[in-house]
Image (cartoon, rainbow, N blue to C red; front, side, top):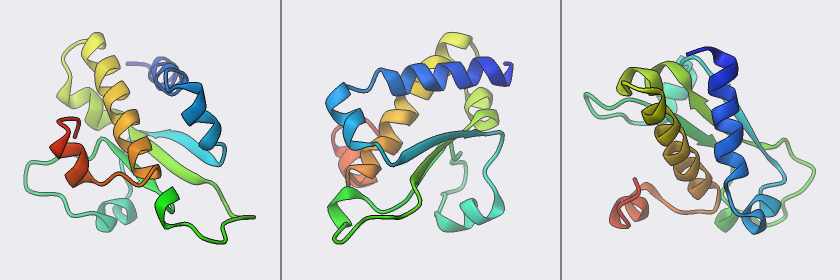
Length: 121
């Protein structure tokens, strides 16, 4: 898939987040990268066979105190891993939507364990 189309699907997924939540995310940048960097991979513990589709880097809202004048938090989606697990453009779109929701949930302080318990991991 062309990077421009992938990026458009990411923009659509972010736009689908309810406005009340998007307003709170004013200091969150969403990026698309082809693959995660070694630094990003070292930050997390992947089990064998797991693939990193997206990553939230920042301080969750639930952990903030005197928070201001800082660089934006970043949600990154990784195009190649997403494409590798999908066989159709529709699957890519759905995976992007799910990944955006998953990573934005981390911004709001929701953990992987909570997401798994809710069936949205």
